[in-house]
Image 1 (cartoon, rainbow over the protein chains, first blue to last red):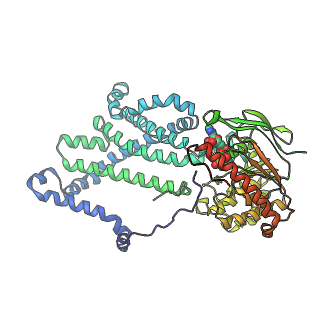
Image 2: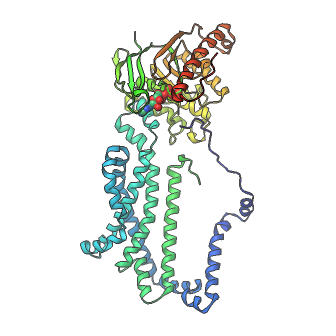
Image 3: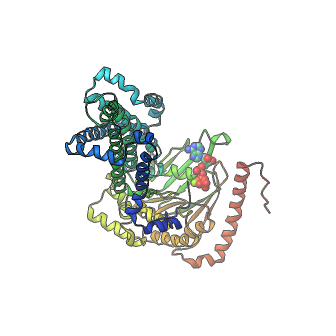
Length: 273
Length: 271
Ligand SMILES: Nc1ncnc2c1ncn2[C@@H]1O[C@H](COP(=O)(O)OP(=O)(O)OP(=O)(O)O)[C@@H](O)[C@H]1O
Ligand SMILES: [Mg+2]
């Protein structure tokens, strides 16, 4: 136990280089790495004929995107994927919360069930896709199920690791103030577990995107994964790029929203930015 | 005749050295309104004694009682202030102090609750920080929040485990006077664990010296100074004499514990 509890640094002194970058203004600064990436991408097709054939330029990707935006087909693919990820991850995390609590709280349950958990967690969801097709067909349920599986096992581990590390001091304090077991759970364990639920959701979202696109690559009529798969068979590199960009930005936006939500709900955590 | 009573208490942790006995056949009593300090070397079993009194663990042998009833668990009549404070980081200062009063065991009506919280915010000098989160407070302020939270449920006894150990010397002196003032207002039975002879002498009515592990009673010293006490007490020659005596006994016990924990070190140079 650390004996000194000095207040945390709120505003670290900026590095000299950081000071000058800050003068550029925050939006400009945030746009800088993207601008560099875009410039590199634009440059690559100009390097040689070969590169030009293999790497579509940003402009040609945009040219392909515009009609798909106009007729709504891109949106349909995007919405199908995004809703599957959100649904699957929510269901998976929801199922993981009670299991994570039991495993985190009771060391006995942890010892008993951890090997089993590690067995199933080790199975790559992608490797399960053939089986889900056999058992559940290629419908919506099969894809969601693979996602729930992946989200569940990812979230359970994050959750019980976090919950088993809840400092006993808070539990002891609450008990000595007269808390019943129920009050202990609702008023102390739950607030302390919330950050871990949010972290688990974040990690599960990442795993969710990976799993979903893989499952859509194998079998789907719509979704960004299937859009990429179809484009691949016609060698439409522009559409593949477009699909990847959509996945990247959507995953990024979801993570950003979740981080904002965490800051609101569990800002007391003094998290390092 | 109430109080907290340790009767022939022994505690054994199978994993601990020396057969695992950490407390051996210790008897001790804390009367209502009495302020008892426990001094003993690091690792001798003081925190263990406090956890027994708090009802957070049971003795291996012997028994404990409070006001004649056996101790079977924690209870709101015994407030505890831990070494690490344990201020809830997700609650504001006000909500922390209020916490015990919102539990079923000692729930108060909102108006009464607010009055109690305001009183301790004022007493502890925390009024300006009522809505602050603990993460933004200094160590001394967190300590005061922990103390206020324990006081708010109006316990008859207060069990404190090195509550001022992490504070700077100046803040510690301020906390001593604050604690004496609170004792003057509402006299509680206090069990204070400390390494500081000065702190024990300044605050207590009785000082209990604990031996190296396993914890036994070495000596019980009655502190003769009347209340109210203030800084001038520290200049009193009787204070200096008691201080010197206690210090010498404490040093012996500490040296013995050090030798136990590290037998190959050079023997302590004891005059
Ligand atoms: N849960 C436990 N399991 C095994 N051994 C323990 C346990 N808790 C404490 N001990 C051992 O019991 C002894 C006494 O511990 P305790 O915390 O009561 O000491 P202490 O007197 O409060 O020390 P300090 O002054 O450093 O706080 C130590 O040797 C410690 O290693
Ligand atoms: Mg201790």
